[in-house]
Image (cartoon, rainbow, N blue to C red; front, side, top):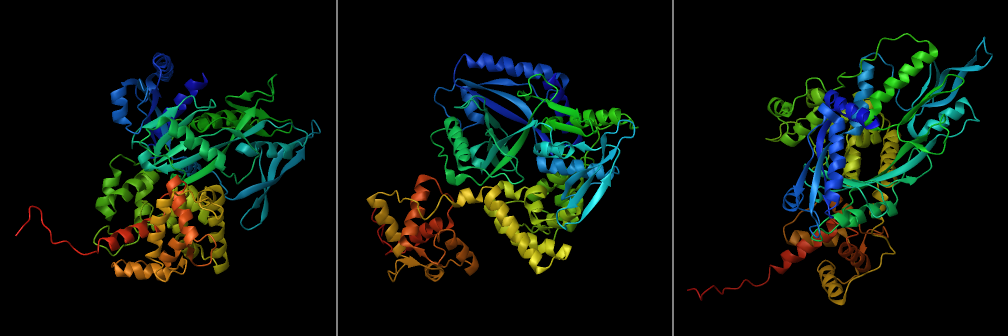
Length: 593
């Protein structure tokens, strides 16, 4: 029944937010003959329970066909694969769409607001305290205010117990928070339209990697954790996921630690049922509980069943507090942006506004029918093409107009924009860091921020990327204590490359040295950009890169701990260009004339 409910809700989600959700085929590679009928039977039962709401029927693939669809797959001992269909959505945008839809239906919503304590009044009949509202605080301004209500619902995920203890300090915890780490790696690790699921990893957990926003998302772990508003991905969990990914990919594909573009940890609010005899066992579904004071708590559950959870919770609130309400009408209720969306909407954006094709597709799949409102805010580029739509960073389709539109969607901070309105912080921490100054500049102008506020926003967003989105874990792959693991020939080769830039044999290079070499081969790079390139390798932060730092970099590149190092690629390219400038031979094939 739980699976049937989830599949019903999945179908509804795909219907009410077609721009944010879509079916995705997921492959289960099979390496033992007996597993083929075993997994196939299980997946077919999944299709059967879904009934008419089955997205597409699952099917079996031969080894040859599986490798054709997923060429990165490990070939050895592969006997075939099973493909089933599930739903995928943009979770942050879906969350926002639900809030905006509620607001359009008359709901008062408050962003960056926390509960200080619950308000109570004495029930004249029983003499017991009854919850009648909450004292709230605006986190940004510090202002406090009261919200009074006939019924208070606690729907706070991992923070469930903190609210329950505000109601009754003696109440026992029901939330057992679990941390799940995900990583993002380049798109070439998976096909554009096929995910992969490993149902039995080395320690029994399930690992998947799926195509998402032109990259590949891989996860997840399952580790007990403390509740925090700022969870941090651990290096051990990141390496666990990479190891499991290696087990399923061809040896031809080198899975490198340096390929991790972003990493984050989320907290699952797993719960135990306080009304169950076995209060220690995890509830596989959600629970709705009502305290003696009338506080209604909804806890557990999962994204797919959010609407059913809300319906059950509101029904309980109506019954408990004698509220009057019509029947639930959220089944089939289109969410913000869903109305007016079609699969070809992006073509109109290209034709009507002169947007790049990739940008138009992104806007259509992110904002749905509201994409035209974003396009109207897009800045003229001054180029022949695209006519409008200045990108925040070159490799992603996010444009400056989205920052302005994000403010209309209740964005209050730069973190909101890079993580909760766009997904740039989740896709590539370095790209997000690069876009931050412009984002803060646009928000500062729109919201009339002081220079102090702009500086604080920039620092807070950088701190968020560094700790919570894996930038720290990425940058620590190259540290002062890194061992140089190079053989003699490699050391000689890299020292020779270094000395092409360090012509005076100082033992270090600066931006001036690099600039001189680049100018000699007619390559011009902005001085600020060049400073950033060297700063990535300058471990001592003294404005120069020593020979040992360069060798540490090349050693880290060799081990796969660092990838896409701009300095390493730049120096290699420059060396190759300089070497090609030797004497030009006049010999010709066959002797010539």
